[in-house]
Amino acid sequence: MDYLFRNLRLFDGTSENAIDNAAIWVSGNKIRFAGSQAQLPETPDNLVEEDLSGKFVMPGMTETHAHLSFADASPFAIGETLVEEATVTAVKNARLMLSSGFTSAVSFGSTYKIDVALREAITEGKVIGPRMLAAGRDLGATASNVDSGGGLSQIADGPWALRKAVREQRKIGVDVVKIFIDGEAINNQNPPGELSFTDDEVIAVVEEAHRREMKVACHARSAAAVKQAVRAGVDFIGHANYLDQEAVDMLEKKRDSVFVGPAIAWEVSYLEKCESIGVTRETVISQGYQKEIDATIETVSMLREAGIKLVVGGDYGISIAPHGTYAKDLEYFVELFGMSNAEAILCATKNGGLAFDPEGSVGTICEGTLADLVVVDGNPLDDIRILQDHAKLQVMKDGVLYKDLHNPNPYLANSPNS
Ligand SMILES: [Zn+2]
Image (cartoon, rainbow, N blue to C red; front, top):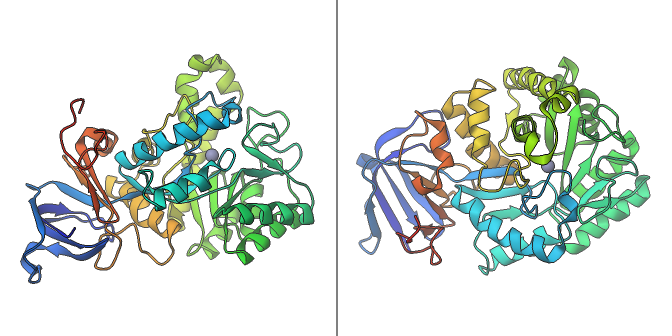
C-alpha cells in the first residue's frame, strides 16, 4: 500500500532541525518524497492519505545493543532462562521493541540460537518485530565475564579455537559475533580493565568474522579494552566507560566505521533498583558503579568532542531495565551526557541506522530510504521522555503501518486496552 502523510512536523534525521507543514509519500517499502508540503511532486490518486494534524514524525530508531532473547530475569541469572521460555519471550519482546519505536536492532548477544530464529521469523513475516542483525552466544575466553555456563556463553581459547567458534556462528547464520574483552565490577573473576583475551585472540576473531561477512561487537569498559578492540578492528564497542585520550584518538581515526554505545542503563538501574535484586545501595557504590557512571559522563564528552558516532541502546531485557523501556536511553543521553534532545534522537536514528547499514538505508527519512517512521503525538524536541510512552507512538516499518501494536490485530487502531 502507498501512503501520503500530510500536515506533519518532519524530523528527517539528517540534521537537528524539524520542518513544519511537511509531507511524506511512501511508495511500497520506501520513501518516495519527504519534505515541505509545498514541494510535494504530483502524486497518483490511489494513495492512502492521512492528515497527521501537525504530529511529529521521525525515523524509526535502532536499538544497537539489543538482547531480545533476554527474558527480563535478574541480571545475575541471564543465561539461566530455559530455551523454551526464552524463545517465547523473545517473540513477545520483538513486538514490544517495534511498539517502542525501534524498527531496527543490532544484537549484542543472544541466548542459544534465538536471535537467528527470530530474525528469520521476522523476515518471513511470521513474527512482528524490528529488522535484526542477529548475534550468536557471547563468545569469551575461559575465566572471562561470560564464562558462567548457561544459554548465553560460548567459551574458546587461542586463535584457532576462536576462529572455529566464529565459523560455528557463521554456520548457524549469525550476523554479529559478540565478544567479551574485559569484564564487570560484580564479577570477581574478571573485573573491568582485566583483559580476558590476548591481542592475537581478538585479531583472530575479527579477521575471521570480517572475512565471513560478519560484524564484531564487544563488551569493553576500560581504555585498555577499547584500545585492544580498535587495534583489532571491532565494529561495535559497547560501554567504553573509562577512556583516556589515547583511546579516544584511536577511535577518532576510525570514526567513520566504528560505533560506540555507552549503554548506561545497566549502571543507572542497578544503582536505583538494587534492593529489588537483593543488593544494598552501599554494596553497589562500593562495587564502583557510581564511579563508573561519573567516568562514563567524562568519556562521552570526550567522544562527542572527537566526533565519534555514539549510538543508543543497552542491556534492556533484565528485571531492573526491562524490555519496552529502550527509549529511556535517549533520556540518559540528554540528562546525563548533556545532549540536546535533537542530538540524542540523531544518535538513535541516523547513527543507529548507519550502525545497522553503512549504506544508509535506515535511520533517515529521505527519498529512497526504507519507510521506517515513528509518528509521535507530542514533541520529543521539547520532552524527550514522550518517546517512552508507547500509547503516543505509531510505527511504520518497511512501509507497513501498525496502527496499534498493543492490539491483537496491530493493523487496526483503538485496541480495548490502549
Ligand atoms: Zn549487553
